[in-house]
Image (cartoon, rainbow over the protein chains, first blue to last red):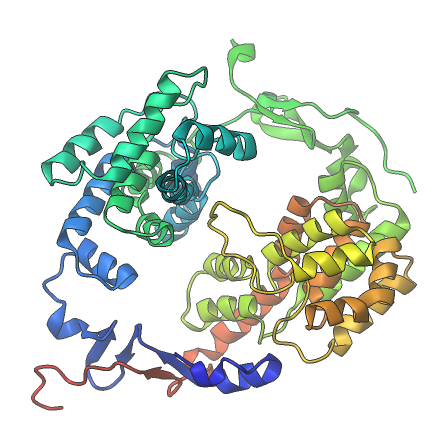
Length: 276
Length: 272
């Protein structure tokens, strides 16, 4: 697309795009009652899709009821914990207790889910690490060497280890579901558990977490790290609404209140005067 | 019992409770300074922002440079992507918080945004004032093996990939900061701007001047990224409110701009 513009640079490039957005992704045809998504007429061809199927089609351009069903199961089993103590959920709950709008609270909480310690940032890296490891192993590299190199460079293997508790209670139910739909026997699921087995027999405290299994299931379906990331960016919201609603239904300001004594000041000077 | 409760640990803030209410502060100390008993009426906003991040007051020269940068960044103008995001909230009558959330999200990225400042700060940390190191890093930008949620940089951080020559306001800002007693980084940037632009084949941008200023002022890349985010919000807020009053009918919709190259045409529509 836009090959004729590929040689343009600077202001000339921008001028070539002014009021000119050529796309195959889609648009609403205003006044004509039509909506086109990836070359398909949404209002006549795609109306029978389930929402997750539409999401898969919108992200990947592929129609895959199987992947859509898998994603729904991931969202149900893996990412919908209605606990206001979880850091992202707590944002939704804090929004409820301060009586902000549901959209503001839920969406703020959602973007907080893009964390280093948990959530969709870890998930994207977990897909990436499986693809990188598999590619190198196919060229003869040994898994234990790759794990050691990854730990040396990044301190973690994304998808292994977990804040607060080490064992991830979600792995087994999602694996059971994946087996029920014939998705648990792929090479990436095997690799994910091979890494898990390495850690179990090592001095490292890392256990497989749900990100690794989700990532392996995505990889076995041929989904890129980028698309896997897109498919889970809103994954936590079903656990966030209960947190927001619960806080709204309690008296305002009552979620985890903190008296002044709950601030532990560790600064150098407790009092001083500002002088020029 | 009180000692067993979890606490928020901070070097920034200390509070003393009101005698009749442990949940209300009778005094708030920012790095030891009594905010409401001493600082009110005494310090400027920019000095207070400095104190929050640095935990010590700025010198007059530091405060002046920081404030100049803050003024330069406060309104990127209505053509800027982050301000446009805020105005998009405004014209539809979205919540005012969403306008700022939109401005922050769009203004966070690699192109002219806070992540560009972060990455440029990393370049400063690696290259300092060594022109050969800059040449090398611009021509061979670092590539991270593992993926991240941040897209990869598509241009030299701190430079405008769509620029022609260095815009006058960017040069004015750089010159002004240097006249105000900026540190060695900004002075070096001023004297080597054209060399760097030749290496990157693109002109210096505001984000580049911002990164050099933050580096001169000894902020970390993380601090620079997050301060850059909020310093640009005043303009986004003002423009959003203005467009809210004007409404979407007087705001570009780009009616004829989207050109579908694979429109299947009317499907099962008798009237088409």
